[in-house]
Length: 105
Image (cartoon, rainbow, N blue to C red; front, side, top):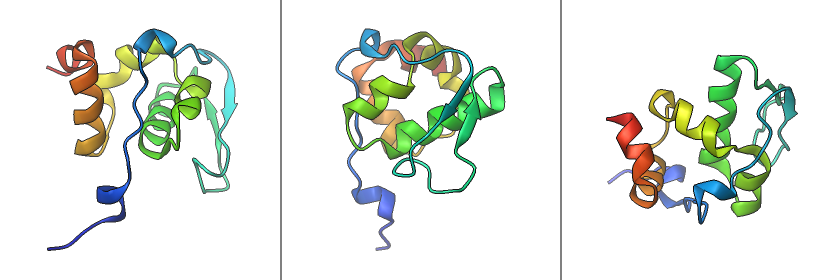
């Protein structure tokens, strides 16, 4: 059986969606621990950049602090159905927050 790096990586999930009160506009620079490429600046006012930032943070978060710093609950709910996420990440978040599963349905 083939194992991928992402299969063994823990999924970090917030305790409550209301805890996510990150920025909603402007330019955001992710630390290299979350985004390894040289282009780590995302424009939250651009839908493609917003989705890419949320996908990256949800996939690469090392602890809850990463989530609290970069994610906003309303934006997360708004873009959830359009995010491309590993199944383990999507399942973990939807199991904890049924409102996300409902938006994806």
